[in-house]
Length: 582
Ligand code: FDA
Image (cartoon, rainbow, N blue to C red; front, side):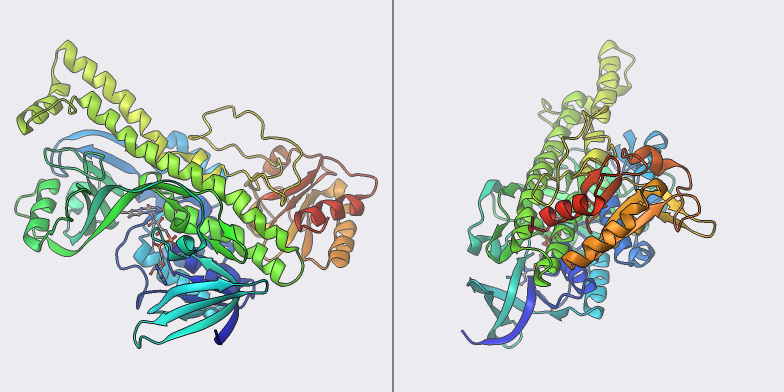
């Protein structure tokens, strides 16, 4: 093949995984090209719940304010409602995404960012714009066709969809971020567990002003349980906010074993009016699309110079809102490693740790999302809907929760327990934030301590190597900074206290010897950064003269509990191991 152009990294796909990979690489100064199949970014809202870790990556890239400007803010995302229609009766509400007053503190303490809602149609353009401004060559309407790799690089055949012209891009590395039907993953023959297309779902997007019915119970999700409603096997219709409170998306289930339903404007309008419970409301249908519910994850994410990220490696229902968030974090894990290897600062073996670290995350989120989806059945079970054989029986079963009878009382009690279970979908803070890495890019000093609380619901901060850097607010008289702000994406950072100031010289020497960007931050009174609330002192677990070495992706690579006799030697040993040079 004759290469028409060359680059360091070629990215296939401009979804959350691909566009963020482009942004991270360009921010690090790595030459990259992003090819994507269509003429523009996502055309339906799909992903929207954007969790704290994803927001932290945007903060790190300096685009947090751009995202917040387009997002529905945290305080409007969380009164998730279960009802018989939007205008009809409520069955229950649950505070979600960390908006319960008792949970809000957990979220605030764990991160400088909060969960917000930004539809994929709004987020992707921000990522693509910033990536392209920073150096990414973005090629729309350009389709990945095939690839061949050798010891030095990958020849990727792409097709210009406007002209039909095919040409080859020679890249040192290829990232397949081409979604759940990834051709790159298929061509690589990545090993997968699970199955695809277990249930069918349809999105109906529409405009209708229903502020009067929802403004006082602001949420992104309203679950409608009524006869005939069905979604992805869950058994309820979902009315999801896209823009408050006049743009919406309905998720509606269909039998995937039958031909896909054709829903014209009249049928879509009827579905919308039924779920809203507003038979005469003016509705503008703006689109319909179909998608499959999957339970599938790759157990290895790389072959040679080719990596896959995002839905290409984890395919699951939207429950828990993990897909886009995890996709962005995949790329965040990979990009800094590619940059170090491309610059010759790390051995190529560092790239193996992408798969070691992210494959377990893929498995965990796919299983969690599917379990949450299945747990919806409990809700129907306690309402008595599973045995209902007609619409009348279903209505009567829902109605029974109001009865002053033993059966009514039992149903009310069971509903409390069923609502509690949904915390595992809507307030799974430990699932969102508790990613812990065990790999050659972490110098382990032991496992995480036994969790004091449920590890799906609750996140516990730790400096055990492999954990994410704990959050605390630090700064000075004039400014307040998050711990993560001390650790930019383009370097390793060593954090110590005043008694550990000797680490600074040690780190300078190691940075010089290894030719790797490494800075020291001393936290303490009279230093550049003060532990404003003394929170870091309580979280760091190391002594004041100890040190915590943090990777560019904010995971802890190594820690020294105290000052060793030769700090440079100890640090050099640890960093060399992380870089595959030890
Ligand atoms: P994605 O599918 O987004 O992008 C793939 C890209 O590859 C596209 O740009 C496509 O054009 C391109 N492509 C494909 N084949 C190609 C080829 N051959 N050549 C070139 N380009 C090619 N997630 C979340 O975190 N929070 C949430 O709230 C939700 N909610 C949600 C609701 C609904 C209804 C759905 C269906 C999904 C969600 N998700 C979600 C999941 C989320 O949408 C999903 O996980 C991400 O879009 C995955 O991002 P990727 O970039 O991996 O793939």
